[in-house]
Length: 313
Image 1 (cartoon, rainbow, N blue to C red):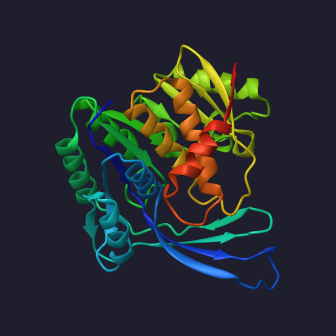
Image 2: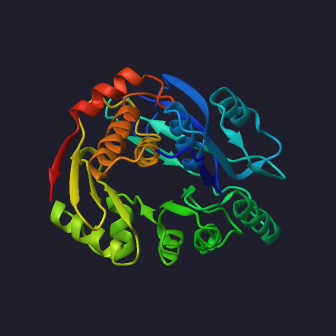
């Protein structure tokens, strides 16, 4: 079991405005049943899950100086160490339309404020300060204007130079370039992996083969999420498919981040691949049953853990 804090890095956080619309239809007049605002961004969500599970988390990246209140209110009660670099302007707002009938979520994502090279240099120096042998850093989410497609590769290299370990949960060119820096853990979903490889992944066997191609590039643990069909986990010694329990889907917002949080928690506790798969899958299943962020009901999570089915591939 490790006592080290885990650092989450969110280059492009957002205030999530989640709008609940039963039976949402594009191009039609839709009636809003409810609306919530949350501090968001993939790394912020991961930090919340880790903190709720009892792991000390440090959250960093970039926040606008003009509207930090929701983030302060999220970090303080969870005792998440806030090391975000404040930049001029406002943190972007992302709109998420959650259809509570179908369980589907439509994201409308704004690009975020543009970064200068001095901003990226300041973050790199901060990560070098925080990094040390065996400390985990999770790099997740989109890359804002000005950071460059190689932003994650650059920051992973900086962490590795100090003996740290990196997890990467991104997409597109930043994910492709980040892979070249050999992160220890990656968690693409099937769509992201299809984009990376330029091929269809429509069977579990094809997903496993795609995961093995990631290991061949230097990744030590790959988790490929397949939505309601579960996820495939590989570490070079064994391959597993985790199948989540059937649960009522309220919103898919943050489910992938909860999965990452569950995986990192299990790794932090020294668990094997099977338990890493169970915790990641159970936390993801927990997240879709709720509209908030984090893991607040430990008893419910324990119940889901017992229901996750594992298949050896």
